[in-house]
Structure formats: structure tokens, C-alpha cells
Figure 1 (cartoon, rainbow, N blue to C red):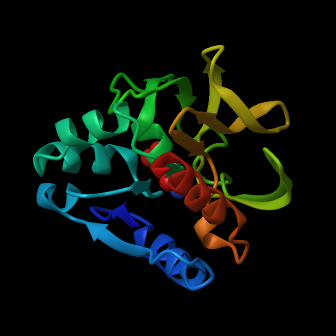
Figure 2 (cartoon, rainbow, N blue to C red):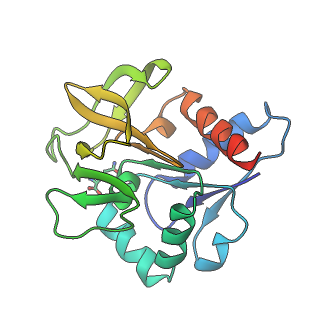
Figure 3 (cartoon, helix red, strand yellow):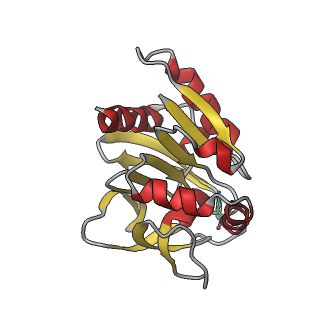
Length: 196
Ligand code: GLN
């Protein structure tokens, strides 16, 4: 299995380390690599869109000629795990920004929804069936509206911070910055069941 992590900006190394650490416990070989240019988008079974700065990432995927391929691959069902800025890239609408990016996830998102300065905090909550997961928020967005077929995985203080929609998982927080690998394992299991 080949998992590509968009590596144009932001916290991509942490995702690669997390996947590498857990890959030994799977029978199937798992290769996790950086996507830096359009040619890196070939033969991928899973895609991770990391946190960082969504405006910069959105511009770079266009400038590097990756936008159309990424859009088509996600639309065609490529399992995709998006964290923080990554989920802003996926969102159909951004409440406080005139732009939108890949628009494959039918939700409305609010950038820097907790404020820019005091926007970083930690809490614990369930993410779908994963109980008591540590949520790390860094100038995070939250989701203000979802289409009826989007599954809400987590709410914190009545704000939606994790969703799943077919092949796409969108998280406001940073699972790669914890020691808890259950979300990455959930994603790998999703790739395995997609390939079957
Ligand atoms: N504030 C960033 C943005 O709006 C996201 C922050 C993050 O990815 N940690 O793009």
C-alpha cells in the first residue's frame, strides 16, 4: 500500500513518522512518502493532507500543477485523511474567506474559528467509535454546516470538529501531534477495505 502525504507546506513529517511507526504491525507493506510535485501523484492508495496554512497550500497545489489531479483522485474515491488546513482545502465553502479550494467535502468551514492568538488548546473526546482521543487544536477551523449525508464524528462545545464523507475524513485537530495512533490506524483500515 502506498500512502502519499502532501508535502508542499506544513506538518507533513509528523504524519509520515506516525505511519512509519505503525506500519510494522500490518502484514501488508506500507510505504509512506512525500508528495512534492505532480508526478508524485501516481499509484497512490491513500492521501494525507496535513495542517499548516491553507492559503499557502491552496496556492502551491495550483502553482505546482497538482490541483486538477488531486481534485479528480479525491472525487473518484481515493481514501483521504485531512487535518486542520487540509480540511480547509477539502471544504466546499469557507465561511470567512471568499476563496475555496478542492471543494470535494460538502461542508462549510470557519478558519481560525477559535481566534488567532488563543486558538491552541487540547481536550479529549470520542472520534466516531474511537473513545477518549486527545484532540490538539492549533489555530484550528471548525465546521459550521454539513450536508445531510456527511457523518459527524466529533463535536466539542457543539462545534463540529471531525467528519467522514465516503472516502474523506476531515479533522480540525492534529492526530499526528499525539502519541495516539488510533486515527491513523482507522485510516489504514479504510484504505485496506477500499482496496478489497
Ligand atoms: N489557521 C490555519 C489556516 O487557516 C490552519 C491551522 C492549522 O493547520 N494548524 O489555514
